[in-house]
Length: 298
Image (tube, rainbow, N blue to C red; front, side, top):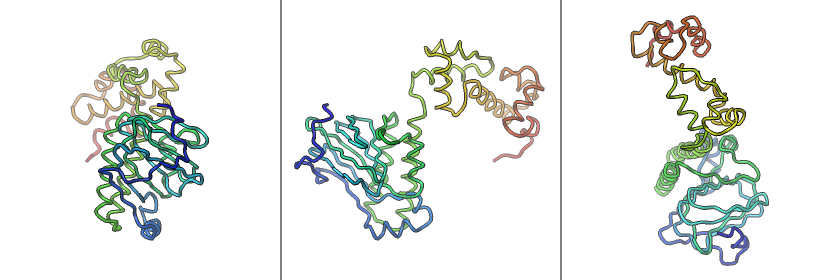
């Protein structure tokens, strides 16, 4: 698709009115009241809908909107322009336009998109967008779990179509939180077959062993420094820190579900020195393996 095929000021663009569409708009006095209440003042859905095969759909907002706009394309194609950058949009792509951002978007003239969408406001929205990697010049996300995202948008749309009572708005706030965090998760969890995902699986299969980062990097086809950067993005720490976290998780499982001696638990995760295992366990959990085992849980 040519991303420039629809002028943003096209006189033929339609805002809505599509066959089998869904459209819910919360009255603005109700929005204003909800933004003063606990929870909904943090995140609030103000509009939601579903536009199938949205021929000539488009919007041009040179001053942006108060709301953050979330659009998920599930079929067909379209485009979005924000911060002076125009991007082609295809299936399994989310558009997230922060409030106040001048923008335009529209459906392809040859293969009009099918989209689920909602608008949100609230004090927590900017932080959630940051977690999803949304920033000036980057308002699209490729989705791996598009079915989960559209299921949440479906729930939101159905809920708002029933009523806009405080209880219903509270429920859709929870759905919107899950929606935005799912977008963030899609960004940081590695896709299947990616170098970092293959490296993670290798570490999972070798909890009782030791790993050299350069050798692991060569195995998955990247440099050691690049692999370290990929792990920092995906896990918040390094390769060895992730491997150690896997070892500690397995140690917790063995302490909780078996009567193995502490030293044997250490050996099962590749730490043959019981004193070193105890130090590593205490560093992670703030207590010794024995104390952890004796702690009442659940």
